Length: 149
Image 1 (tube, rainbow, N blue to C red):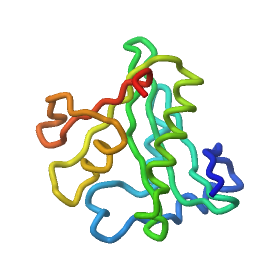
Image 2 (image 1 turned 90 degrees about the vertical axis):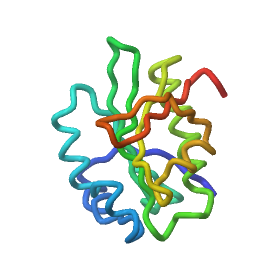
Image 3 (image 1 turned 60 degrees about the vertical axis):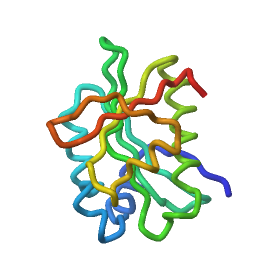
Image 4 (image 1 turned 30 degrees about the vertical axis):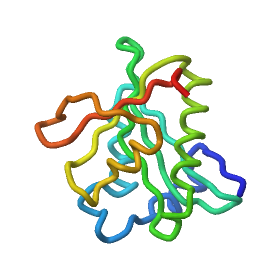
């Protein structure tokens, strides 16, 4: 299926805000509306909608720190109706490609809650590795080197 990452505009903003994760995931991730609001307070936000054909199915928010050569993946979500179908891994691959093209060789960091229902195993299966650092004492930090695949 044809997937692409698209800029979020006034035309698709509402549709992106209406996407929802599965009920058991709501304690692990903020809504897309909250995430887009948070982007206004980041120094260098980078965000995209995930589309399959003409259907929005997910959202990505990263923060770019060019001084430390570090990208932080703040949000990655797929709508509950599009999970467990391979779209997540495909979207992560597109994310890697776009970030590498735009920023070059740089590390992509994220953190996940320490919960078996959390996304840790998904990220590890996509090539992230644990750094051994705890974020805010409760989340496991993961990193993916954009020159490693």
